[in-house]
Length: 418
Image (cartoon, rainbow, N blue to C red; front, side):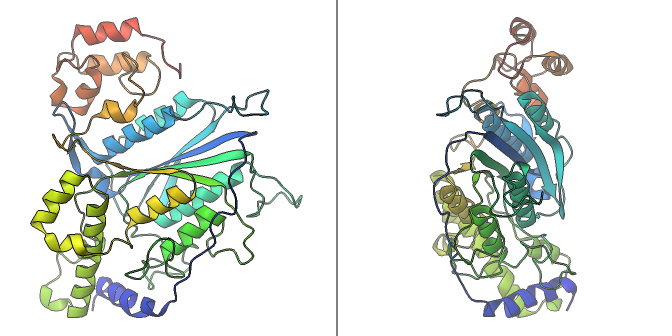
């Protein structure tokens, strides 16, 4: 049996003996943001985000383009300070940090800053090709803790953050743009080299539902961290992470499991029947999860092709975890899917939900030299020729022309982030 097969077999055999336990939910509502807002934006840069999509103009793009637009739209919707909060006389500027994750690591793209233009530019600068696997559990846990530690009440006076020392008067908001499918946090496979990550673990057992995940599953650890601030739970019920989670789930039509993909080159005779069954069940659960959160039209079209999927439980899915965490932390969970009538994505709707600033080619909230340079590179091109031309066609005429150029000039220097 090769290593991949051994991983699968151990997951199925060893993990089936673990018990199931519900952890304690957040103890009380968050108090007002008297000390401001801290934001962390996390963007999935793993291989599945390189899947092709079609934009409203007909231009080709990839799922990362959709995720970036959605992240920019989320940032634009956030308050730049805590003015308007009862009891606040001198507003505190909002601080925002930007991260990406892929492989077995996450990377800071922009340290905490009060400059929304700088943060938006860091998102826009993500142009590398998405690749590698998905360390979802470690990313959500570690960056949730980084968010809590960014400002905390040092009750013990030791200068070291403790799980009960979060500042309740600074609202901690975590945004994740992803298509899910944890598969690479150390500890996901029992045979992964030690040490395992504190939030690492296999999938929760089939049939378990949010919030009653199997103890020591990665879903169990992640929920504990996001709700309580500790990956292993809270014995006395006093902990409260204070993190608010928003998730934009970039819709998949169904991505086969990484385990199945790794067996493509393996002769079928070398794969034990027990492993094949485990893979099939894993893929059925994921497929059904996709269907449960898909737009109705997509559910109908996929279910008609594979009706057996519609009857499978969705309780193990990453999407169910995201939806549950968002609801439990007073955040929101959104499936970002194409227009059901056209099958295309409209970046304007995602990046500028309150309306696009005329001439803001890169959606960073400020019409400036970057927009002029971006437009000149595709002047004379049809909007459908590339994603760059799609964005530069600010009047949506289908052609990047002098009218678009004049619109940028007229609005130069305008926008909330200028």
